Amino acid sequence: MSTDKPAVPLPGGTWSLGELTVTRFGYGAMQLAGPGVMGPPADHDGAIAVLRKAVDLGITHIDTSGAYGPRVTNELIREALHPYPESLHIVTKVGARRDEQGGWPPARRPADLRRAVHENLETLGLERLDLVNLRLGDAQGPQPGSLAEAFGALVELQRQGLIRHLGVSNATRDQVAEAQAIAPIVCVQNMYNLAHRHDDQLIDELAGKDIAYVPFFPLGGFSPLQSSALSAVASRLDTTPMSVALAWLLQRSPNILLIPGTSSVAHLTENVAGAGTRLSDDDLAELDKIGSGHSVAG
Ligand SMILES: NC(=O)c1ccc[n+]([C@@H]2O[C@H](COP(=O)([O-])OP(=O)(O)OC[C@H]3O[C@@H](n4cnc5c(N)ncnc54)[C@H](OP(=O)(O)O)[C@@H]3O)[C@@H](O)[C@H]2O)c1
Image 1 (cartoon, protein in one colour):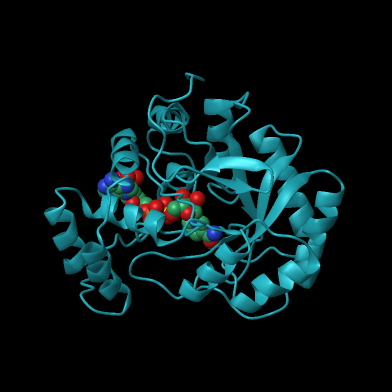
Image 2 (cartoon, helix red, strand yellow):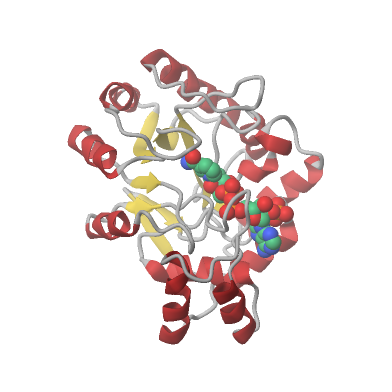
């Protein structure tokens, strides 16, 4: 792995998570585990190669969770990249565990969270985690309810020096506000993409407070984004729909950080190049219709 700075800066530039500078183009490691995000990958060496390529390309933000595998993606990250370059910031999340069917039941009691933070430290080979997101809600999305007890447990671990910064994930606007009333947060990680724009207002509010918004499923996750408008804009610009979807997020708001997932070096390289695609006002107007419920084919 090269530690030289890449010759070409990544699209989108950088963002500050507290005092930590990260590239707005990051990498989401979930796709590196086996099918259903359970067990090891079919291609172990391929997974290691993707992680090393991400760092070689200049990416300094990797998103993971002890629940991916479980433990698998953290162990791959450690194998591929430890000792970590100083510039690299690994963001993890706690609040769900895996059951034998591959489900994601909540694990948000203080004891669960303490265990999860220590397990992340161990599997990633770190003494302090740069950023821990408290994952709320369930597979259907955010659910109402107080996060005070769970978030308070993470604040206590932060006070003990085990966590640098906190964030929330899969959260309602009320929960984001409740967290902020308890302790500073540096990011919100929720589902958002061209076709799923429930958080538009939240993104703008967070931008005004210099809090990052990190969309998960930026490319549609397990159901890739498909829309006639997206395909039309991509073909006009002679690029791919995935590139346009990422470029749109970077142009949507300066506080949006990308963590697209891929298990392929070729896709990673393509996504980095494509996210720099410049979208005109006409392109943006056409793409805006997707989120209004028009043109979505799947
Ligand atoms: N907080 C939460 O609750 C939560 C939930 C889900 C995910 N996340 C995080 O968000 C990250 C991103 O989500 P995600 O990975 O599930 O979804 P995603 O980034 O929306 O999409 C990933 C999918 O797109 C495919 N893909 C990527 N680049 C491509 C390209 N250039 N051409 C064709 N296909 C391409 C990948 O397949 P290939 O492997 O074949 O490239 C993969 O199937 C995750 O890695 C994880 O870190 C967080």
